[in-house]
Image 1 (cartoon, rainbow, N blue to C red):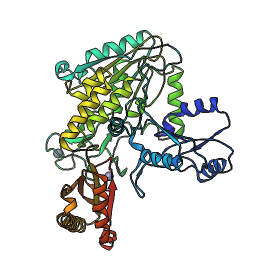
Image 2 (cartoon, rainbow, N blue to C red; image 1 turned 90 degrees about the vertical axis):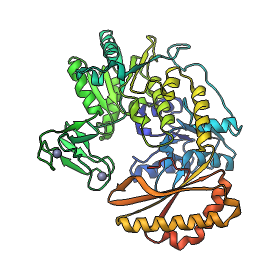
Image 3 (cartoon, rainbow, N blue to C red; image 1 turned 45 degrees about the vertical axis):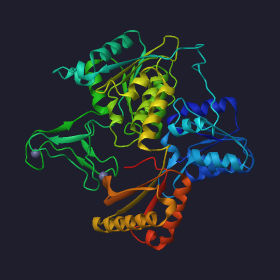
Image 4 (tube, rainbow, N blue to C red; image 1 turned 120 degrees about the vertical axis):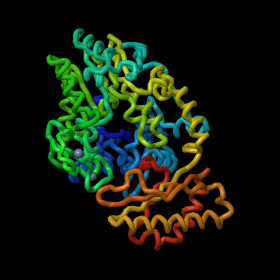
Length: 494
Ligand SMILES: [Zn+2]
Ligand SMILES: [Zn+2]
């Protein structure tokens, strides 16, 4: 069984497996129709194939005699199912592997901190591939990474707001030598919000507590959580001023600016908006492989395991985007993203370079990504997590309540907190358990529901289990509307 994060993002992968094991593969993922899925499932059930490739649900492939389970890009958060039955496919793979006495291989150039910690604890064996793998060049070195401080290169001309002189020059060189470039900005749309510069009004989603993202090409403002869409207005609905304009930066805007600077270059954007049609993604990737595109700009989709030998330049427009997400995993995710995207440069004979633009040039995530020092990053990040007692040094349980009536949701979470505190207070074994909250969730309103949460920090799973078993005695209270959602080992605290 081979599990990959989002199979539709790496169409090359299937082809490679097919060429090695023709006719011996079933494919399982959520974009299949029910009939297709049944067909694939039967191939496995009737022993017509011996390999299943798919997203996290491929873990349930009905093989009777599993030999090996491979989790590719094991650090990827899409292996966690966030709704209904919450599970992490990596953890479940380790359990299925144990039950079936199968080998489990977790693969990644940037393993999750938890997996690295498990190596230190000797729960997982570490196998290193110290040399870069390439079918073309033996022992190709990793690309040079340069960090550009945007505070230094900032000038009053709008030219420098997106591209530093350093990046512009590198792009010019790339085009001159008919090489290719990948640019990453992990934010789609034209701008993250539309702001009135007279009165400060920001266009917000009426159903969620987030600002609407500006899409200039389609002249729309859209919510990324519930897809609520309105037409762009140029007067402020509040004060009727005309200084109602997009603020900030998204991939659409970068694309527009690229066209301005390089009118003759062939430029394409790859993000969730430009690849809504299934065929589009495959087409962009094959056009890029056939060098029909000079510059590819996109979100984290461009950082996936693509292998294009003619890419000699990778540019990160603003590394700070992922750094400032209010989540203790933000530094880890930033390091992984930068390392992954840097790995797209210099895969062929010509070598390559990486330019990272940022306002935080001294941040350790960027510094360790610059020197390709993965182990260094893990040491540093582990020491910070230990100090703050965050995973892997503690176990988290996220308790959430949401309801269309704010009052109802609030009353429920307060009641829950009361029960939680009394459980901790009355069980001598649970004195080391920490209850944080209740508090409004960072995303307070989502799809017309108000959200509150409570976080439990425990030194061990044993105590988590004990606490939850005591909590579940209040089953009626937990299930009664608004129901309480329990997420053990949450990956998303928003
Ligand atoms: Zn206004
Ligand atoms: Zn919304």
